[in-house]
Length: 379
Image (cartoon, rainbow, N blue to C red; front, side, top):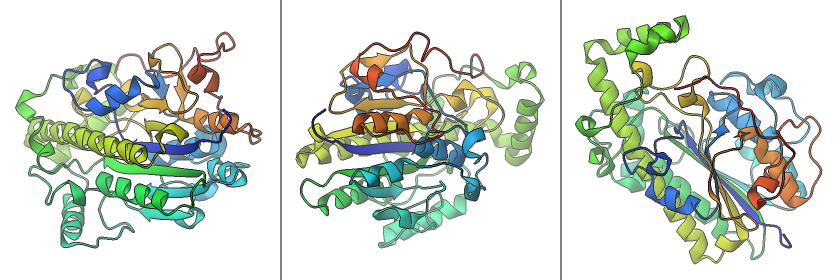
């Protein structure tokens, strides 16, 4: 690779890996991602390092597992242990950096050259400059991380994924010509509160959703942690629990389509600016969501496939158009080593991930190098 590429990481928060038609799901939730992935490498055995937001995101930036970087909860970022992370490596190589969206890592917003933050409630540091944006922020706060039974107010332009893409393109447009850049476009959705505006709210009606693979009847085989979690949600939701979970599933799938549309808008924006061929784009998630499996939503106990498997698609200069790659077990900890390999820069001491560059180029890898991933069987 003769020229240093730009890097963009597009992360959706709490996005299941298997709810795409391209992965066998009956509904067409992310048609653009499915099509775009054919021109790159779509890892179907990609896993989070920890099915919790902050530990997973710190792993992505440091190349370490949570027991090594020591951030094991959503509340102890100050304990992060590492020698150099993704921002350090990119800055040492002359890159300008941006965060557009949710952070939730050991890094501060001031550590990025450009930062336009947002969160789940709509009142977590983002600028709500229009009445529509403020109305959505107030609506999100009122949901208290629950599912919405009505469409979100306003249109797609008030939603965080739209605004994250708008901010990313604004960052790119403000750079000097030829300046290499890294943008972390970090959507807070489809993480709760489960909500979507029209037309996405009505796109996948609850009564038309395909059945989930498991139910509350399977909890007896899953053990006390699953059963305790189900009992908590029974007390919270009451008799309306089935209807509320069905609506949460519907909103979640609608938000997936909204995210897909905004990802398409980002890629088209790069193309219009003549940057697509020079930019390595990674689409992924920090972890998954039950989305109705075992009668549950959100995340919670143990290492379920629904929580641990994540989408991870790489496309850009030097990457083969392989489409689905179903053999190799890869993880969020492999992002930093791969970037180091692309830049031909030394790996930081203590980094535990592995470079995926040979897989991305179709080259030979050591036998057994990517054969193992530890999660629960089934869902």
